Image 1 (cartoon, helix red, strand yellow):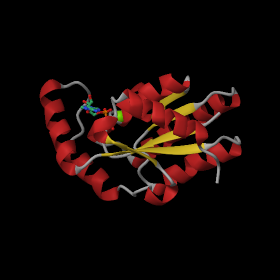
Image 2 (cartoon, protein in one colour):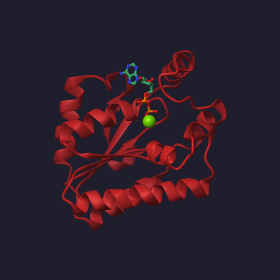
Image 3 (tube, protein in one colour):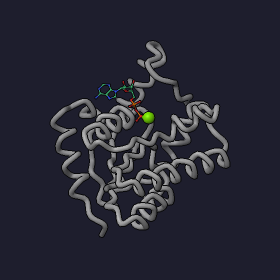
Image 4 (cartoon, helix red, strand yellow):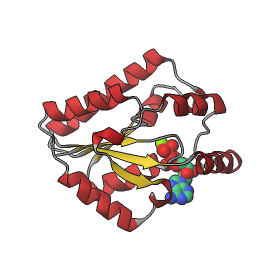
Length: 174
Ligand SMILES: Nc1ncnc2c1ncn2[C@@H]1O[C@H](COP(=O)(O)OP(=O)(O)O)[C@@H](O)[C@H]1O
Ligand SMILES: [Mg+2]
């Protein structure tokens, strides 16, 4: 089994891609946003740090259950602070599972375009500007962590999906 962690800014297309990747791999999909919703919290409005810690703890527990049952896991989160990625890497290592970071990259202009389009179409929950700004400023690039990199425009591309699924399965602990 493999643990794949999504990484990237809001509106990059992480959730769009993570759902397809989980389906392609036959993996369990663990969404931090959905755990927040289950807990009555709404990430786009900003969530207190202690609530994030609890959501991460629940996500970690679920991932460990899945790995224990021999399932691949795709974690849909922003994976943006380094310490969070390090924690997921340790979870994978403790289970002897290969670990892959799937980084969906988006530039500021396209992100703005998607945020504004979504505010009129309301396809998904909004993320308020203060949270977007805070997240962009705090984002720690995973460039030194051998990420699998995907362009934000390619998150619905079937060939990108196949290539990424293969790369995730080929990941090894190093
Ligand atoms: N390849 C794409 N082309 C156009 N729009 C996309 C693409 N991927 C995602 N989107 C749209 O962009 C928005 C953000 O996608 P989402 O997967 O929710 O991002 P994230 O999980 O990274 O915040 C959604 O409205 C989604 O429909
Ligand atoms: Mg998402």
